[in-house]
Amino acid sequence: MNGGHDLGGMHGLGPINAEPEDAESVFHADWEKRVFGLVRTIGALGRWTSDASRHARERQHPADYLRHSYYENWLVGLEKLLLETGLVTLEELATGKSKELASAEIRSRLLKAEDVAAVLPRGSSAAMPTDTTPRFQPGDRVRAINRHPLGHTREPRYVRGRVGVIHEYHGAHVFPDLSAEGVKVGRHLYGVRFEAAELWGENANDNSAVYVDLWEDYLEPA
Amino acid sequence: MSEHHHHHHHHDHEHTEPPSDLVLRVKSLESLLVEKGLVDPAAIDLLIDAYETKIGPRNGARVVARAWSDPAYKKWLLQDATAAIASLDYTGRQGEHMKVVENTAKRHNLVVCTLCSCYPWPVLGLPPVWYKSAAYRARAVADPRGVLKEFETELAEDVEVRVWDSTSEVRFLVLPERPAGTDDWSEEQLSALVTRNSMIGVEKARSPQEMGSSDERRS
Image 1 (cartoon, helix red, strand yellow):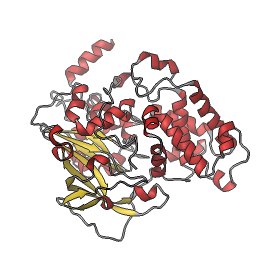
Image 2 (cartoon, helix red, strand yellow):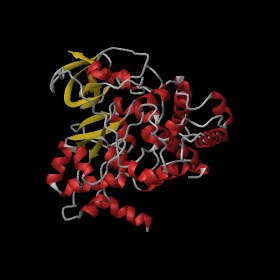
Image 3 (cartoon, helix red, strand yellow):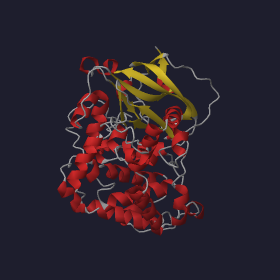
Image 4 (cartoon, helix red, strand yellow):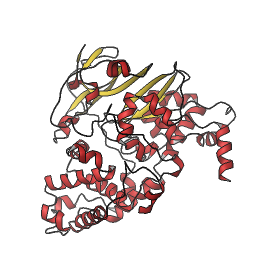
C-alpha cells in the first residue's frame, strides 16, 4: 500500500537530530519497554506473521503514522491484530478487563519467563524453497515493476518503474505480500543496484547507488 | 528510563512526551493480556533486560575487531556473514540472514530501512531513535551525502556511496575501515574504536586520537 510508512525520498521532515551515541538509552520511557515486550511475547503465540505486524502498523492514516512515535505505531498495530484475530474483543480492549480466558490451545503457547533464555538466540529463517528456477542472474538489467498494490508490499515507491542491475541472488525467501495475509510461499529474492541518477534524476548525489532487495514478482527484464 | 528524560533532549518530532493516556493504555493492555493468559509479565522483564544489557552494539564491535585482526575471519564474514557471526554466538531474531558490506578508501556503505526499521538486532541491539525517524528513512536513500554531513562525516567526491535499503529479511552490518595507527592493537583495544554509528555507516570508526581526546573529556 502507498502508505505513510513508504518514506524514501520524502521532503520536509527536517533534520535527523541524532542523540549522541553515548547518551542514548535503548528505550526512552517505561511504556516503550512494555510495548516492545508485549509485541515480542504475543508474537511468540504464532497468530500472525511479522509481515502482518508490519502491515498492521502501516494500515493507518498517513498523518497518524507520521505523528505517532515509533512504539506508538507498534501499539496501534498490536491492538489492531489482537482485535482482528479475536484474541481480545473491543469491549475487553476498552475496559482492560478480561471477559474470558484465551483458549487452552493458545495459552499453551504462552512465552514463559523460564523459556526466554532459550528463545533469545533462536531466529526464524525467512528462507523458503520454491520449485521455479530463478528468472534472473547477477548482472541482468531489470525494471522494478510499476505496481501499486492495496495490500502489503516491500517494493518501495521510489524504485517503481526504475531500471537496476541484479547484484546478487539471496535464494528464495517468504514472499511478504502474501505472508502479510497469512499465506507463506517462497519466491526468489535478489539484491538490485540502482544508480542514484536513475532514481533521483538531476537531484541525485554524484557517485552513489542504492541497493534494494526485491522479490522476483517485483521485477521484469529491462 | 524516566519520562523526564525527554526534557533533556530536543527530538520532539520523533518521540514526543507520551500523553498519560498512552501510558495508561499500555498498562491496561498488559493487564488484560495477562488476565487472558496470553502474556507472562516476567518474560517481558527478561526480554527488556536482554536488549538493555546484553544484545547491543558491543557485539557488532567484537565482530568488526575480529575481522580487522584475522584476515581469514574477515574473508568468511564477507562471504557468509550469518555463519561467521553465529560462530561468535550472536544469533537470534533479526539476524537470521546477515550481510556485511566493507568500507574501503574508495567506497562507503550506509544502511537504512525506508519502509520500517529493519536492523541487525543480534549485533547492534535495538535501533536508535534517529535510525527509525522519518527524516533519516526519507533522506538516506535520496541524499546520503547530506545525511553523512549531518553526522559530520565528510567523504571525498571520488568515494562511492552505497546505500543499503533493508527491504527484505536480509540485515546489513557495515565493516568500517580500520583506523590508521592501530597496527599493534589487540582485538579488545580495536573493538573500543568501533561505534554503533560506524556499523550503520553514518560515521567512520574512531581514530586512536579521538579515543584519547574522549578519554580526557571523561576523566
